Length: 131
Image (cartoon, rainbow, N blue to C red; front, side, top):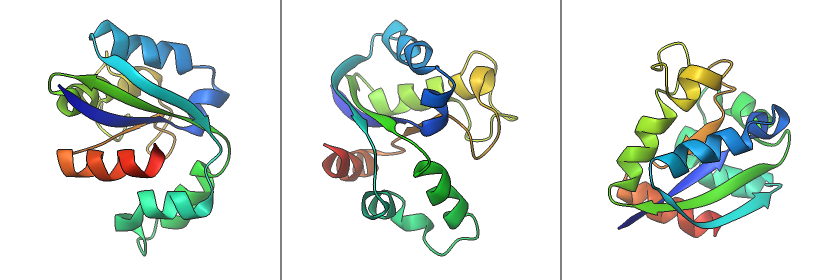
């Protein structure tokens, strides 16, 4: 069993897509081990996105992620990281396959509904930050 972090971003809450997003993970037999509603602050988000600091899109990313509450989830299952990333689809919704969260529901690259850890190391680091 493997744990991974999923964040349902502010656009997921604002567009009333939380149930649909969680349903897709549950349909793939991923277990919810923990879940909480979070109003993140700049410090937490800066730690979460530290590898993006200094990039031209960082301010827009932070503004978006600070624009409302989000839901943090710990999902568990065999190969959970890989499975979540497949369910999420490519980061850019225009490139994401139909049937994925981003391919079906996301608006654009910045408003792409979800974050999922991209590796075991990232999952460990991110889970420690959020839970």
